[in-house]
Length: 421
Image (cartoon, rainbow, N blue to C red):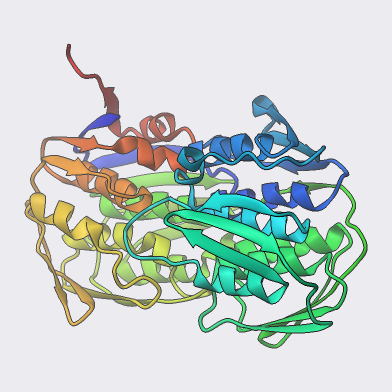
């Protein structure tokens, strides 16, 4: 898929933020933890969600998707593991299925997850946790063979070297139905993890948050629930950065939770963007050139790593230099090559991204090597003089619902490029 985008000096319109991708995917997998029906509301129609639906259907989950109502009904039937390598490799969040199958004490075969390849992201924390509850895991190339060999200890401590969203959620999955007490030290407490904790507790899980630990006391069963998913803070931040990048913008944001965007809004305010809260909306105005910023990317509530690439692009037309340090994924650098194609002045110095005023960006052919790099390329194309092509753009649809329609609603000149045969 290719997108053709022509530069714009002004954006105007209203955008409604969709449900959170990073919360939806693990919440869908919770259906493996109960035989009752789970109803999820505010579901985004994105390719990652559609792929997770297929994976769940392939192992015995009844899936009913009511797209018009943004509602997903899930119910566990007879489990049979039939995971296909090509499907597992399409989505990184497939590792949540590993945790839920372990929670069901099943023996099964699967593969390493796929997803964006901007850096090496091993799943060692996950595999170590599965072994603690009595599993032997045999690796045969990309294949993983899970065998339950023994019962686990009454009390298990999980010490995460770094807070990990995926590992924290998987440890929750394998702990809530296990007889005994589990304690997660140094867990991730990102908003999406908090959503999983909240829903599991409403389903009957016994989870206590104390300081920097999560204590889980196993229960016999969980019950069904109807649960509304939070709005996507990364999608909101992406469009906020788009608004900041164009010479003149006035965009009204709907269905966003400002609680989870505090550092993003603070950063953009420091850079010179103007905000006005009105009822449950946020009106954003850009009328002046941005001011450069020094920003450190870190765990929540700091500025999110998923917005680092887009922030890098937004800083190109600031009137002063910027420096960005990403402590979460310092190797998330695929966008640097694309920025240089547009004659943007950017360099990596001692793990610091240095961005300099680049007033004459040139249109070109950009490559979306991963999801967030893809949206960064969209912002770059809107800023650059002329018409640009974004290749591999289907990756962007993994995390942005109704991408083309939403951008057109903001007056972005965008269309899908068709190959001529």
